[in-house]
Length: 88
Image 1 (tube, rainbow, N blue to C red):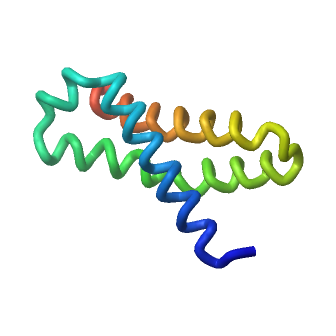
Image 2 (tube, helix red, strand yellow):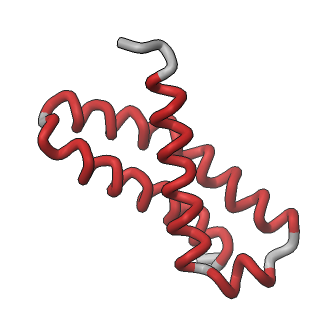
Image 3 (cartoon, one colour):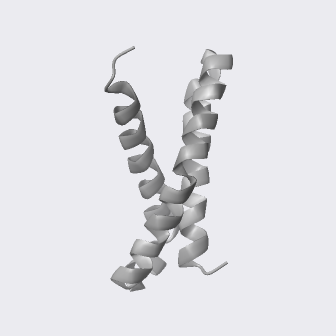
């Protein structure tokens, strides 16, 4: 396994999650302060380890669902940030 693959996966997952966050909460992101945006990112980072572990477990157990597992992981991370921005 390429030692850079987990870093690339994490980077792509972060990009996908942030894209979902911004597209879902366009108004909240535009109106948020720097601290509020940072809090959303902190919430997403806090969930990153278990979400990535689950993604890798799912992809190993059923490689044919790896893409769906990736999208589910991105949505789960985005949800953490959305909850903070919407104060849910």
